[in-house]
Image 1 (tube, rainbow, N blue to C red):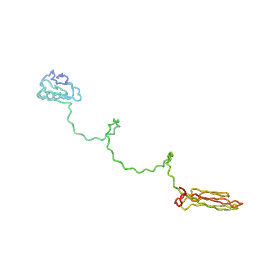
Image 2 (image 1 turned 120 degrees about the vertical axis):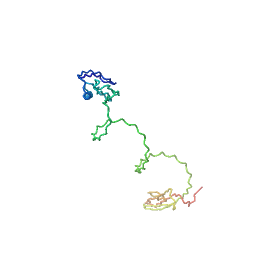
Image 3 (image 1 turned 180 degrees about the vertical axis):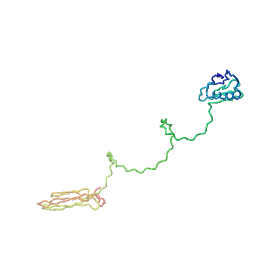
Image 4 (image 1 turned 90 degrees about the vertical axis):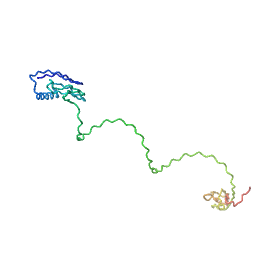
Length: 254
């Protein structure tokens, strides 16, 4: 039985290890090839012939395989990590831990369950101001408000200038009556039509009861009421001062 003492493959290439063998006779060529193939399979799956390195992510391993028993060695040599070793003529190159081509996309799987609510993201940037909107329609007229309170009374204004003296023409009208035995005496003196009374007066030896202007809205006559004496005849005279609005009477004096 042969004894193989290989060295551990590293990042570079590895030459053929030395072989010590003690065989009673050289096997036939067909038998040697069978043995070499069997030994190669054993070496590839990690037997004691050539201890393979631990595969690391992203690393591709390449090595040369000598399956010819005639030279006294069967196995891998020049193992390279991420390299491309040069093999002897006729020896195949073995590659493992190399990513194959991307396969076809499989059918879509069923929709998974809804995941938990994610963490709230940061506040976004402030957006640009939008365009001005169109003017709205005019609103309806509002209801009338309540009446306000009366304002404070204003200050009394200054007196105006004195006006010119009126050129007023006046005249008087007198009337009289008499009575006795305590009878009621009533007499009136009236202004002309269209004029009004400025004032009036009376005279009697009886008992006067009233003396007042008559007419509305302005007085146009003056009336006096009195009681006659019981022991003698009494007289009652009344006089009214009138304003001559129609200038029917001439003004006395200048």
